Amino acid sequence: MHAIPELWAAAVNWLTIHAVVPVLVALHLARYVVDPPHEIAQYFLLTAIQVAIIACVFRPMESLWPVERWPDRHATLIDRAYTLLKLFGVLPLFTYLVLSPLTQWLGGAGAGDDPAGLLSVQGMLPWLGHHPVLLFLVYYALYDLVYYGIHRLQHSIPWWWALHSLHHSQRQLNCWSNDRDHYLDDLLEALIVALAALLIGVSPTDYALLVLSGELLQNLGHANVRLRFGPVLEKLLVDPHYHRLHHMRVDPDRPQLHYCNFAFIFPLWDIVFGTALFGEPARPTGVGDPMVDADNRRGIVGQQLYVLRRFWGAFRRRAGWRPGDVAFDEGYAPVPARDFDLHALEASQVPLAHAGAATRAVERP
Ligand SMILES: [Zn+2]
Ligand SMILES: [Zn+2]
Image (cartoon, rainbow, N blue to C red):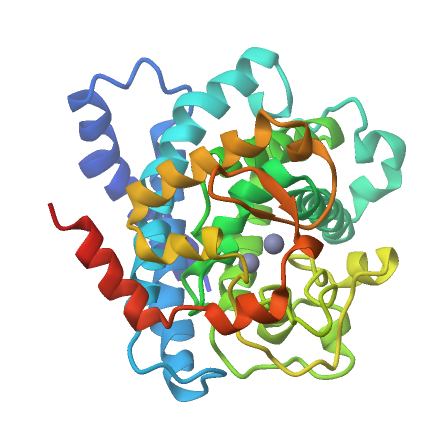
């Protein structure tokens, strides 16, 4: 039984010596990184395991038990690129070059494993300190509650929807879709969640465990897999069917139906706040708004730039701050969704294959 921890320590050690330290030195980054190199090596090993589970478990499940059968998986490729770019590039750069030094500079919980914070859970309920599993579950529930709150705002505030709608424009929702996000959206989310973690006093070790296990469940939640946890467990833990309903294309006959299932881990928060939807059959995923659906005609750089324009079109207008379900006009101004003929939009959607062909035609110099 001791073999696994020993093997893990040896792998971390090997990666630290042969990859992390030489790369930090070669890039002249060693002096800017406050975390010990073995922590960075540990991050990359855990991330490699996460990616291996997506590729070797969730992806084959999509072939064996798909919800939707697609003629090809062309539209999923960009999501895989988003995941690899974020997990092996953007996230470690942001965490080790910005977030960690900032946290240490602020002198918060990130500076060590000593849990402290203005609203420290352990400070308020000291007996929880003797029940580490229960304490971890409380952190998990609070972490998910913060995400739930952010997610409701991402759908309600038009400028935030302008960013988050990139995540929803995917019509082939798949096991790589969790990281298809705008980087500004990621940054806002990361800062709010990290601040919340500091306030409630989550230790860095618990925080890393929260993020990793939460991520894996969200990767599974996006998978195109006919998997349901059953009438009891589906109310305790988010399954792929539950999150697929959150991604449904607007139903012209029931335009409020898609405003559901915002929780990422515990459906409890949707049940408490009245946004849970169970028992509905899966519907096609994507968005009804053609300005947002146009994301499917672009690559990562194009998506990031156009979504930024969409964001700015909403952010600089008063309508961009008025809560409500919106679509965007040609000048990226948010327009209440009720002003659109949803049946006409549904009928006018371009098939994905044509959207891809249109992209290649447009992007050719
Ligand atoms: Zn959403
Ligand atoms: Zn999602």
